[in-house]
Image 1 (tube, rainbow, N blue to C red):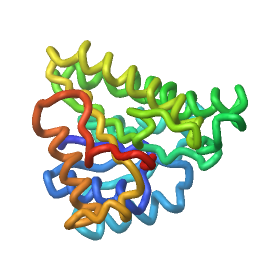
Image 2: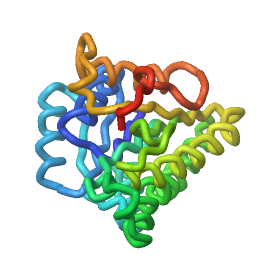
Image 3: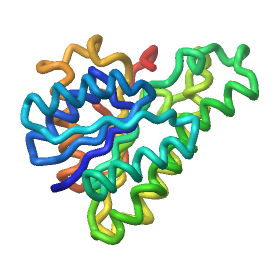
Image 4: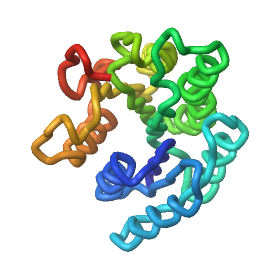
Length: 224
């Protein structure tokens, strides 16, 4: 059975993506910081007939993140799809003149370095199988820097650059590395089917080949 691991699983997008992939026969590994919330999400998915388990880990603690992904692979099977979508701290959305080196480093650890650790944990299994997907979910500052959102404007492009390089390095091995850019909050985008439309788009990024970056909607000034 294929396995989806969601780093940054939450009751909104994470849950919607989990339901969409579960409908295709995927087992679901949910990863975020709070075990109690993960247990509740996993129980809801299991009530719908899915196989789902929660693994608590902080993306700022590499050993925790790698351990969670390794435990998921041991218990559910090798990770087929990795979605890296932890929600950035509001501290990373401070204006540029308030950005300290320490905060910039933390934002980079959260976005770029966290992805590198996660990718390195799952790629051996994907490369051995000759298939898999790594999907990045980012805001608009991954494409256009904004002085009012300094932390993500520094960190998201670094995460994107690593993802782009992985895309180019792995596309000949049957492994897709894709990025979905979501400019702004999903409820404010007024999509016909709301968050389920985003989950459907993410399923498409895994199931069909394409360019590295996909914009959920066109980027406009003022959208993060």
